[in-house]
Structures are given as structure tokens and as C-alpha cells.
Length: 77
Image (spheres, helix red, strand yellow):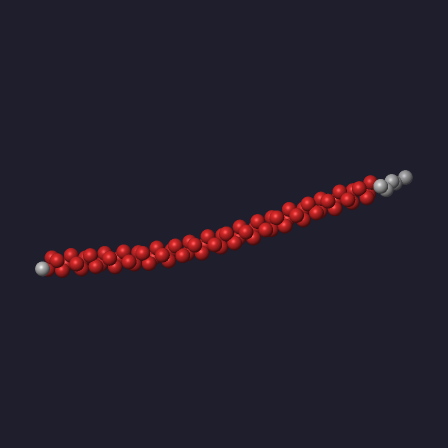
């Protein structure tokens, strides 16, 4: 009877350890999920900033061409 009791106690301890490990894994999974969401937000912000920068660059290029066209009309004698 003592052997059975010891086995049951051992099984209970193992089940408690498994339950504890499962809780830790769940917490780590949530931390990873949060980190991925934060990284995704940063990537989206960077992407938006890059698109805006490209748009501004195109606009500045157009303005530079316009300015060059206007300046080319003047002649210095």
C-alpha cells in the first residue's frame, strides 16, 4: 500500500510540475505575441514613413525640374 501511495504522490508532483510549466509557457507565449505586435507596429510606422519620404522626394524632384526650367529661361550677358 505504501508503494502505491508513493507512486500516487510522485505522479501528483509530476502533474503539478507539468501544470506549472504549462502556465510558464502560456505566459511566454503572451510575451512573444506582444513583442511581435510591437515589432509589427514599428514596421508599419517605418513603412508609412518611407512612403511619405518617397512622396516628398518625388515632389522635391518635380520642384527642382520646374526651377531648372524657369532658370534656364534667363540669360546673363
